[in-house]
Image 1 (spheres, helix red, strand yellow):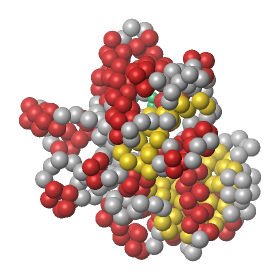
Image 2 (spheres, protein in one colour):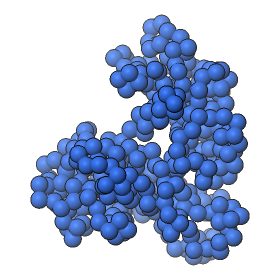
Image 3 (tube, helix red, strand yellow):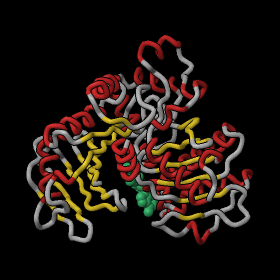
Length: 398
Ligand code: ADP
């Protein structure tokens, strides 16, 4: 069975084609600047050189068509015809309270996704456009939706309710949803496998630390709390996102600086986080570099970031009445030993001890805790695309 996984953003489209016999990636690629001058497609077939097309990609229909041409091209394609592809799995950002798992997309699902668009105005409309493009260009091929929010639908009310008048939850569905669910699910399952423990009897704290970041408390295979909330703005300090801020700061600033809601939103989402504190960059590599060269604000940004992660780990250890395992994943979590060290240095009271040599390694799933550590600490590269392909296959097999 061959499954195409699509992740559509407002001006981008990422894809991976899987052969589910052995879960091998046959090809992957990225369309950038869809609908914007300078668009291009980078196609990366397995075992062959990358190919770059610089044709104008007017919209997502054109981009999907271009991807199909690349996948079936006699020279650098990986299938003879699109008929070989059995299904398409779509990454969908927001499933609201409608979806606690992946689903085959039909009209009712699309209606629900439209309703969720208000909750994720930057993401869900792009996901819907990708779905429509595939329906048009690959008629009759099953489409599956895999949601970033679904894994967190097991959060209890005490974790998802905000203490604002209840009528706003009823009227607008304002509550905490959580994101990165596909990643938290994947790495927590992998962690149980690596530790040879039953997933249903493990308390894991997963730290997805990339440009966006979130932490999840996974108790017995279920998300019971996570740091992102109504939107991916809540929680940790991120590349450009503020994370938790006293809500009064927002009204104060809007008044003082005469800001519109959109301007305020832009500051919190695009100009804050480690970029906002350091003034250097949103990329942790640049900030680590500046900090090493004595930039005090860069050092402060890293400190604020790590302190907050450590506090949340403590909070989730309390929420689960213990923790067996802490997992680091995503760009920063997988690659930055110094950030992992900064965080774990706060966790001595939990009995966390890091093995310096293993913590300096990169690029594979591994344990970085020392043999005397009471809590096991793992680094696991995330693979959201593989989860999407597996869910798609499972739904098709049914
Ligand atoms: P996204 O949230 O966009 O998917 P990623 O998971 O790809 O983000 O993470 C990207 C971030 O990871 C970069 O912005 C960078 O800050 C960080 N990162 C990647 N490699 C390293 C590294 N070697 N050292 C420190 N930070 C890194």
